Image (cartoon, rainbow, N blue to C red; front, side, top):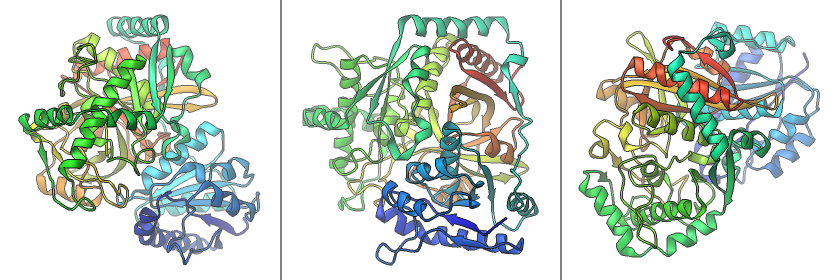
Length: 530
């Protein structure tokens, strides 16, 4: 193999790229040392920018410039220690004819694992062949052996024996009937997905083409975040304050201060309450059954972040909002919200809500980032963590166990509070809808949410993003490396069931529903009842 070319994709935001660069630089040094230890050479495909003070590809425009200078047949490594916007580099990777390797550091800090999984899902959707690897220190035997294979021109193949095609399994009759009936009702009656500005954060993998989505019965209403902002401005102060007062009465805490540049302020919270009211009214106006707000990029220069809004929308018990004619909107019912306009999560969230309600289970569900994980007392415990969309129903203590903290200024200049808490112990069903070979597919499995000591939870928070809600997840029958090898997205969908038996029934119903809707269904891991 000739000299490998290494590139680093990054964020759009200068502040994020500058703050995250030291971690990326350390990771690249370790990867370079590993390649050299295998007796091979590596060159960086683009220079450190002295003016910007980072070495990331930070736009699609710059990415195209970089790829013009990279030989199309060269072995190419995309090294990620940070969140990255896949569209910065996807154009070049789609046209590249040489072998591609995506690599991430096993760290929750910024995080590279989440960025790499998004890029992997985007490459999978685009039909681009690639290999992928991850490591703590880039000196372990598994990483080095697989790296050597790739440097020798081989494709890296990981163990995915935990995956079973639903077509090879028999579903229990009762939940199968539930899932099939819900799918037929959706196709017959149809439903609307409200999409506030498609394509958030470069997540190509999160966009479902209409020709794949519409046969399920779900159709997009493409909405503008400028319209959402305009609707926020029409919300009277007293209505916004009523939402805040409702949350205060529930015991939710807000960690506020007086400096809006660094603190969460009361004014920021009231703007988030306006967004909550406006989102519900727009969803009602357009008949939306699920919505997705592009929380990072769309409104960041106009309004506080949408995190608090998203979590409230996904909860059955939430501040009441009325329409102009006096109706309480979506009364006692979640309005499923998919964070970062991840349409795969939107389809999944709507299906999950309807199945869980039919089974008599609490319908709240959310996506999380598959952030990272570590062993704890003999079990591998994942950190599932997402800024927005987590409902209070998932948290220990509900609203009273939740606190809202300001989003980091490097991402959100205008602030806004999160809906932070620790997910309660219990049995869950996890899933992910993704696109491969021009088809909609879904992986479904089972897991347990566990309790960890306060000190360990706090350590994991400090190793990731301490302002965000956290879930300690133990996957049944799926190892760390199997999950990384198979998962085609940065996000994972989760929903609680009352017990293990109920979770297995819900899993079976969900599998039947997706199968009836035409998705290719795979069951992952063990303890699924199948």
